[in-house]
Length: 140
Image (cartoon, rainbow, N blue to C red):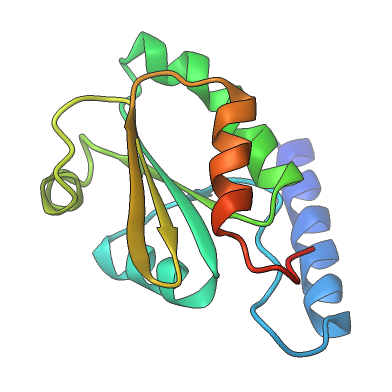
């Protein structure tokens, strides 16, 4: 990452911290950017922390995954869901745990439970509708 990218990330993080401080009660506001999962416990923490999590199981070498990347990034910014990016090559155990047999696979979690599984590139509108269907009524 370049220094400019690091500065941008720091500014985004600071805005998030400020927004979380202002928020009264309820689940924390989901990040505006996809979160790259570091390990199994990191994904579990995200699922516990946020009401709705869209986990994108992907591989860097996967063309359809690359096509889906800007869609999931915009979903992170525009919906109440936290978006978790799980590299299946780096986290084969997680992929196996969630039954991922092909990429991209999207798993939608609501209230800590897997509620939807979608394989392949999808339209942004369809994914946004699924998120909205499972988001709490008072979600921002």
